[in-house]
Image: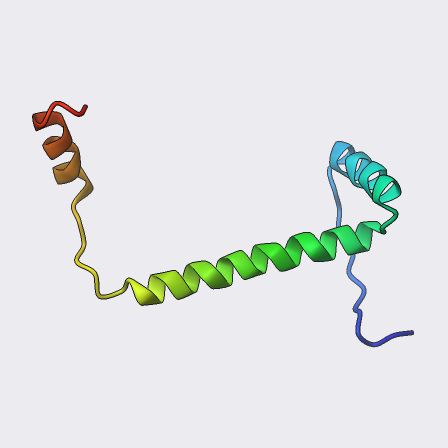
Amino acid sequence: MNTKYKRATIYFDSQLHRALKIKAAQSDRTISELVNVAVSRSLKEDLNDLRVFEERKNEPEVDFEKVLQELKASGKL
């Protein structure tokens, strides 16, 4: 067995599992491939979010209620 891959048991909602089976068949890919791509994309998005948070950590905080009041005072809300 290829040690690049590790086995995991995942329980899907029955409708989601059905959709995955159909998509896998239509795209000539396995459910594992589809799940690996989706998880990888999600983790890359998280990594990007963390990078952006780090870049913006020194920006001043803005009080949300104050922004809403300013928008209301200017007639934009």
